[in-house]
Length: 267
Image (cartoon, rainbow, N blue to C red; front, side):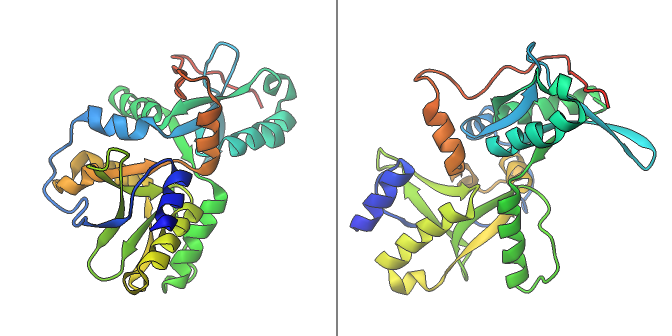
């Protein structure tokens, strides 16, 4: 079981891998989980957006069938947010772009902003932008599973699971008592976990696969599923995001308080 210990050290957790069931996500009568539990699960995942020196969001306007649409982009990848600033905004509006910065928030902040927007009938669309590399991986998985030509739409999450009984690999928390089901933002992370399991338990490992699901569906399930196992789900940030979190000051949160007013670049 040394391979599991090495994996645990890599993931920042300790212990062995074992099985648990998780069925019927989102398919049962809706009973919402407490919002503080949902927010807590989303709090540890950073997302990145663009702000001006006042901390105001950058709102981009575009036309869709002659109707103007205003959007604020939140990126799963910090690098993607920086590339958007450098490769697009600096070309379209260099004066404005020179005043902007990539600012971190948490996925929980994004979730709360969207919920408030719905209550206020806000005309601004708050868009979560996935890593294009991971969308490509998700699309490739769909095509390999008989859905040729289908494009993955959404924010992909990758989950090691068993093919037949709809149960998932789980990992103990450091206390050794509680367990969680990791949903990874990177396919490579899910593959690493599954490879270690296959090495340790080849017979069981032959019955495993990686499932790709949409983050929005998982968030909806957290809000509505009656399955108690849903609370075992933990969203595991990408390696890039983990390195970013580690780079922060010891007591600094990845979340930044969003500003009330947006900053709109001129085209």
